[in-house]
Length: 141
Image: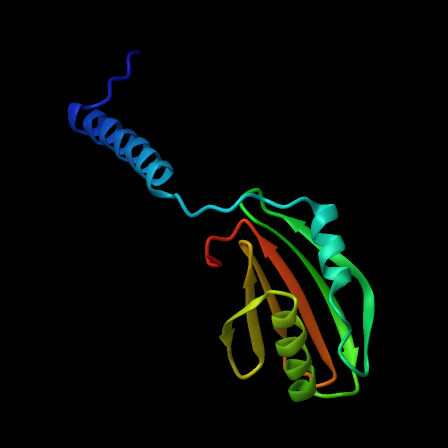
């Protein structure tokens, strides 16, 4: 028993492979903004060097995640100060350390420096927040 693929189906399969290969090559050539990945130890050192906001204390250990194209480390904190004071603290201290503001929303702030993205986020609870450092992201130029 022989199985043959119809010429139309064969053409669709070959075309699909060609399109995917072409897209991968194009994506590789045009993606010039990819930042180098910073090591886990350097990210850990960096997040531990951030000055603590008044009334804040770490909750557990920092969590490191490696997704091959980007990496991040995040630390959860509890605070008795409230979001406004915490945001004011990080706005001042991170800018003094050379970070530039990138985005400010109702419950988060982002800062950029040397291809790293730092975010300070409150997730609905005014007594807890998270600081995250992301590397490899092209969103920070």
